[in-house]
Length: 184
Image (cartoon, rainbow, N blue to C red; front, side, top):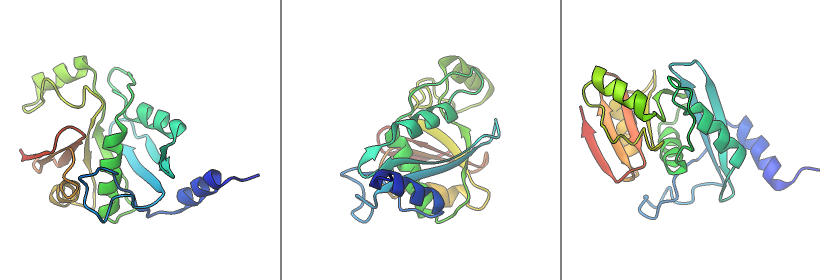
């Protein structure tokens, strides 16, 4: 017997382009409540892993999908998993939807332990000591077919979270902290 939830999950998995948007009260009207399904597509730049997951259906997060996302977003250097903030998934999913591409985001960095963050801050300028990565609320992403400018403009359009553009390094930082933007 197939219930409506299972049917929607099967349909969403077969669909390549889905409307996905955060349900923030401050989000633009055209994306508020946009559809019954939210999906993400990522390839991990460091591990080669791939995720193509429906994580929200009919007003509820799918707990099994969130567990999969938590593992995918883990600190691969320390192999540590933390519950990833679903609000940031919403921003990432909506950004992916606006970019109108079936290409996955390439994840450069998701959750980071304090140890990994400290190591990166010694090696690279611009790594914040109190990074949203340490709170499992941030992702550094890129796409082969979209510029950092296009990705950051799409993410900025929601006026939610932080969006940092790093054109020389070829990635965009997206987090679910307070709204702010920067270019480095």
